[in-house]
Length: 199
Ligand code: 13P
Image (cartoon, rainbow, N blue to C red; front, side, top):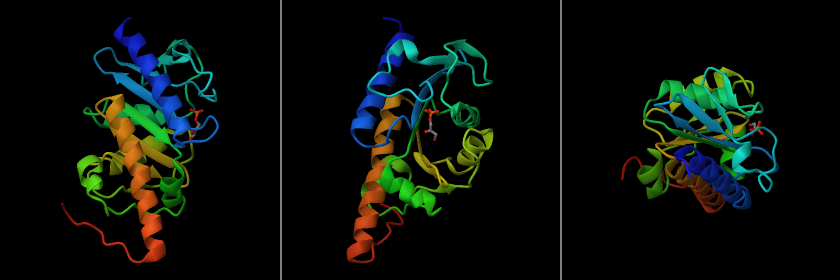
């Protein structure tokens, strides 16, 4: 199997796993990997249920919008493209609507660093980027502004973006962003969580 085919399979497997883990509902969320040497992005198609998505459905395209294989990329492909353009260390982008983290996003609040994992995986707190209309390049431009040094960020009134050097890293960061938000919400119900300034 070619490297590209392996990555398409991995995108389908991880997207389905994330759906079952509750990181997004319905067909929302999207995942991509960037083959920087070839200038090719592999990205989930728009509005396809994760139970039925197959590796051959993954869209191959360039970050400028040129379609190479399949013609139905995620409506958020510009978000992915802008993040790849802004940060050469990022080769995987995972956009979720995980519920606890998205609760912070709709309040336009950062998720504070209250767990040690925030430092191991996320670069501390998770910042919330400025609001932009879904599907526009600004979603990615505003995310890229707050991402340096971070494993991910929130998109105001929208959801979560986790980034990584590969799909596994972006995935585990998305899991820890949701966990950080969930624990913080629970902690606020019984007391006042203490933010960790450093490890
Ligand atoms: P798709 O277009 O990738 O299905 O995504 C919808 C979405 O999650 C918008 O935030």
